[in-house]
Length: 270
Image (cartoon, rainbow, N blue to C red; front, side, top):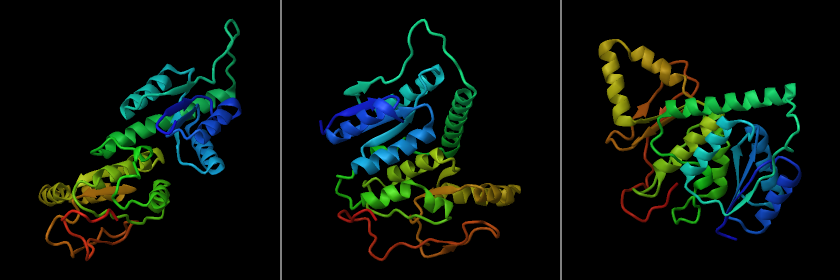
């Protein structure tokens, strides 16, 4: 089963939780676990990973009572493009029985719906180049990527602490794809993201100086939690220091290439 993919509904507790744990022990490559509340299912993934000492679990918000939630989940599975080898539908109700909606259930459903809408809005605003996710990363590729370190970056604490992350490596190792994966993860954590090529960003700022929009553009950039500049070291002035506007919570940002960086093949991703 090492190449199989499973999907388990209702995995926050009971039978679904137990089956997900068993599937991880059967060496499934990926086990997608679902629940009505995305925050609860994320907590469940953390508990399952700690119990099984594996990183095969993927959270997915899914409320089978909501057609919108079902359509969103199906669209996400189609986007990932991976066939489901094992499906456990651990949810449903007895026919003929009246469906009782409690205040807690309505509140949880509304919170889940709003969280999903916030993620979709942030993802559209970010304009990330690749549809990437942390769960799809192949750590077996020979590019020097530390799995433990990258999963630590995926929790987005470094963004909340206003730290910087620089990905360097040769062309074709997947720097932009990995950065976009971190960007989508930040959107899931309700953080604002902006993807922009550095040459275009500098052109916009230069244009802003001429038409009077420069101050507004700088304020917009200052409100972004994660700014993703692409081709940061592509210019010859790579040792120059770019200092953000006064009062910006992220402070000064120094652009400098590592001494060992080169465009020839054979260098790992750092």
